[in-house]
Image (cartoon, rainbow, N blue to C red; front, side, top):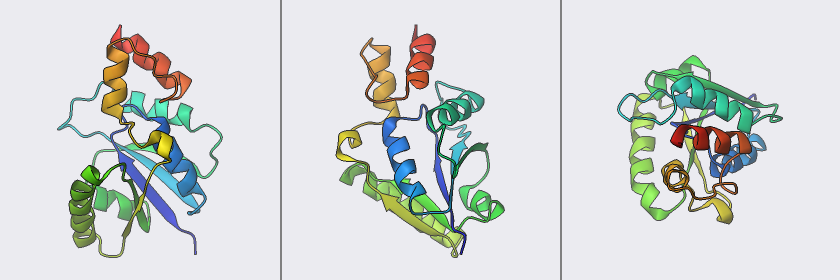
Length: 159
């Protein structure tokens, strides 16, 4: 059976925590689609096109990984792409309640799709896109948190 997983998120920007989950997920599934949400409710630092391009750069060499943007209901997008799994990351207990609600709603909307949670490696468990943006905005070194292309893009955008 060919199993496709969708890893959805805003990825503003993609971090090493995200890439860690993607690389470990790539060992579990035949294909992972990193689905970057347009998410008009949030005000992202980077446009959807920029976030897609940064993710592609950060994930170069991962042959079973595809990066694309989407602007629809996740359950509909999962069906459109013939995926069987939604992959989500859990960094801390504080993430659980929100993720549990999302998983329940997605199960209701797409009962044939499973949600699988992975935890990041310990060195990435505290990293979030918003924290990386904040550190970069205050002039801190984000080298160990993001791909070099993402670091350069953040530094250029926040100057």
